[in-house]
Length: 287
Image (cartoon, rainbow, N blue to C red; front, side, top):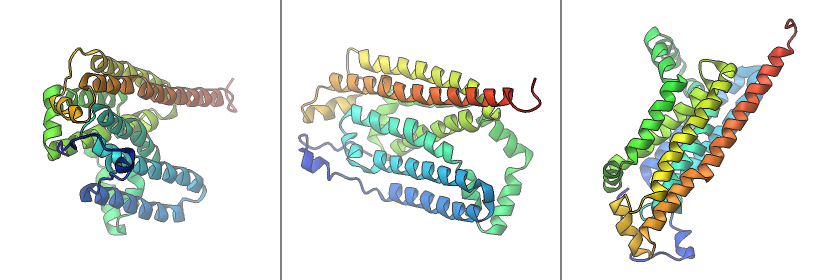
């Protein structure tokens, strides 16, 4: 997405029709939906007692795809060409709403089952080899996932790197993809990590660490005494918006609403940890 602001801010009736029809995004979301649907249908036939869990995962996946579409195809995408606050909303939808939903859905198993049987067997054997298993264990370590996602978040908010993404659609696509994939990996590590449900207590700590470091970045944006991103500073003037005010709004968006969502997820993980701990304590055979 390159910067192409209108000469002035659109009225509400114009903006609401301002949808993006990016063939690559549409094709990618459609392909992801079709693959998951085919895999889920095949899994449903053989899952037996696990069908209810599969239904909930499917609902989570569909909601995640819808949020991705909202972020990348709705009028928010066009507004993000101009307003840094809209750009921030777009990124946070991908990282804090869509990503945990996709992680909850555990999409790898349906994707594998969507393959023809011969390919599925080969892929399954390949993924069970020591090297892929070790690599996956490293990537889904909470520490690695946290650090990787934090590095990506901070790197892309360096002014020179962020401005480069605004100037080149290819770099911007990489930015969106890296935000989303590292966020999915982060949430996967916390929800389905190697420690299982016992690890929910660890996950809570990592959620709060993420709240802290992202809050620090948000504070830098909100309290800066000058606009940090030149393309947005130029574009907002055409819409009659003060660039520094817009940047403050973006920082506050990352700080407060996103922080509240993260805290809510952290509390949900904490409740799951307490529930699992109490069930173990009262399980037959425990003193």
